[in-house]
Length: 110
Image 1 (cartoon, rainbow, N blue to C red):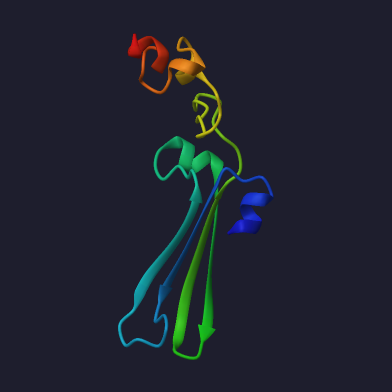
Image 2: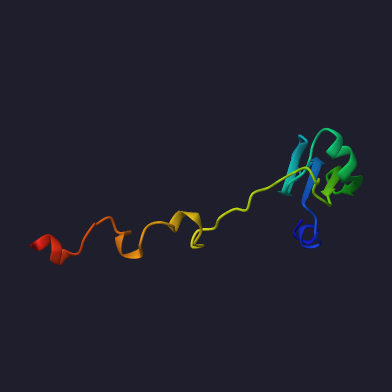
């Protein structure tokens, strides 16, 4: 999954279904990273899909991989502001007044 994302994909989804971990009942495990369109025209046009079966000790396991290579031009994502990054939140208030006190201790004593 990390290799897919490092290769430049917008999102990836890996689904493994079948007898996982030797249990008697079958299960489905999903691994997802990034953004994947799941329905509509974008899912048909921009998502590459592949399916395969693997024979393991406990039986046959199905593997499905979906990769979204590029973002639709109509989608707009805003930039996320990280903590510690100075942005809009620090404007308008001087650094010395950010502590909540409106004056120095000398002014309060008088």
